[in-house]
Amino acid sequence: MATELDGSAMGLFWAVPFVGLLLTVAFGQASFTAGWERHYGKLILAWSAVTVAALTLAYGGSATAVAMAEMTLLDYLPFVVTILAFYVIAGGIHIRTRMSGHPAENTLLLALGTLAGTLMGTPGATLLFLPLVLTANRWRRHVAHTMVFLVFLVANLGGGVTPLGPPLLLGYLMGVDALWTVEHLLPPAALAIALLLALYFALDAWWFYPAEDQAARATHRREHDTLAIQGGFNLVLLYLAVATVAVTGAWSLAATVDLGPVHLPVPALVRLAVLVALAEISLRRTPAEIRRANRFGWAPMVEVAILFAGIFITMLPVLAILRTGLHGALAPLIRAVTTADGHPIDGAYFLVTGLLSAFLDNAPSFLVFFNVAGGDPVMLMGPSATTLTAISAGAAFFGGATYIGNAPNFMVRSIARERGIAMPGFFAFMLAAALLLMPVLGVVGWVFF
Image 1 (tube, one colour):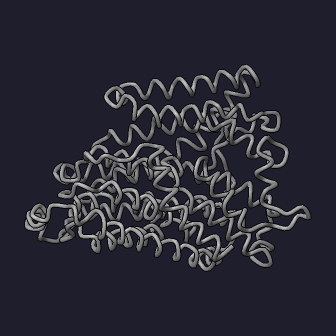
Image 2: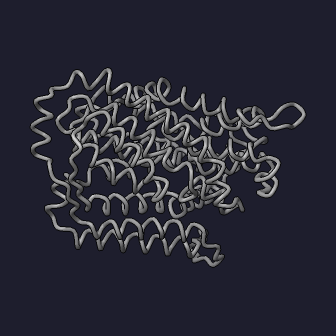
Image 3: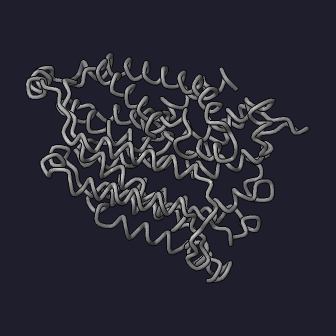
């Protein structure tokens, strides 16, 4: 992305559109909720236009056009198609359970969803388990905190063990053995997951659940006393989608298809084609009553697509700066991970990689610090194993610190809001993450790094 942009010549003021977009989303939803749904697209377009105009003035129309084309075809389009495919396929699976929103049952669902994330990646696991949790808690008044923990666990930490998606897949492509990743990331991930599940159970059981109407729960249990799976063939499609992402991501075929200045890797094209085909099969074969039971709608997908289009555009200069490493405006962050004589500070790698991944794309954050640490997978898997573990864990674990830290985060927010749940705003979610998630990650950093 943005290979035509010289990040070394950019100052931090280039981050203004990106920060402005985030502040617009944060304050816009809280300040004028009624008009936000009608006008958020225009506001996002405005910040995107400011970025494109500034890049054009500074680097010329040709360089900006190439950067935009690369971002669209190599980053944004794969992102949207992947999320769309999982959204459509998971939306065709309706699971009826006996779960009724009890704290122990919710904790079990969160644990199973997190485990599923290690087997199928976070987008599929999130979109599969989100309807289960929402249905089980339909009678409850206090559900937002459960959605917050679902973001922490299923949408993020579930993807922090196996290299099924970025950023851990990038490590695999750089030469990091898949079993090494599982072996070294499973202990810190397991600690973080266990602490968050215990924290959720305590919070729900001792604070929120006692305030609920137990008569409403009894009615809910009578309505949902059977176990059934409808649209089960979509589970096959879901695993085919997961396999497609994993196989094409690890496919080393060097052939490309040239679209003007952009060289599209053949594996990426195959991935897009297969995911679109799987989504089309799901749409055609899933009975309408199943999607109605799941309250399937296109509004959350549209909101995610529009918001992240603006994020991808406004992030262009920020990522260009980040890629320059020690030669760019973010050099102080890069220097913070090593001592004066060049020795790695593993705890700093964990924290700095994580914080950048929480606000920017975790893939470039991982790559930058992978290279800062030497870029040699043999050395990093051997004598510098703790450093690589810190980089990998930071990139994978911190995505739940903000709504934009990982794609499924905002999908959870959009779907929950559509179901009538008063989800926290951008800053309120960050505050919740600071109070609940960050102390847990602090313990993980203290124990392992």
